[in-house]
Amino acid sequence: MKWLTWPLRLLGFLLWYAWELILSNIAVTHDVFTRHHRSSPIVVRYRTRCRSEFETVLLSVLISLTPGTLTLATAARPGEGADGAVVDRDDGTGGYDIFVHAMYSDGPRDARSSLQEMETHMLNGIRPGGAPR
Image (cartoon, rainbow, N blue to C red; front, side, top):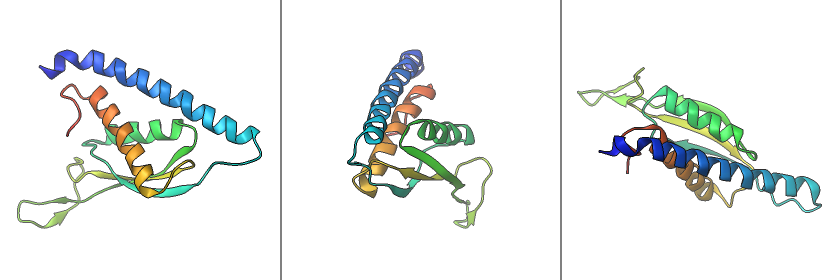
C-alpha cells in the first residue's frame, strides 16, 4: 500500500529539498558577505543505502547542487557471493560509497548525519515502496 502514497512522498521530498536549498544558500551568502567565516570544511566518506546507480547519481547530484557541499567521487562497494567470497557486482547489490566535501559541519558525524537525512528523504520520495529503515 505504500505505493499509493508515493506521489505525496515525492512532492514532500521536493518541498523539503527546496527548503534545504534555500537555507544553504542563505548560509553561504552570509559567509561571503561577512568578515567572520563560519565554515569548517571537511571531507567524509558516506556509505549509502542506494541500491542502484540511478539512486547514487541522483544523491550525488543533489549533494553537489546544494551550496556548501560537493560530491568528490563515488565508489561501488563489492558485494558478497553465495560462498562468502567478495565479488564486484555491476547490479549495485554491494552498495555505494560517496566522498563528500562539506563546508559547514561540526565534524564527520554531523556531516554523515546530514547526508543520511538527505538520503532518507530522497529514497522515501523516489522509491514507490519507501526508504529502508
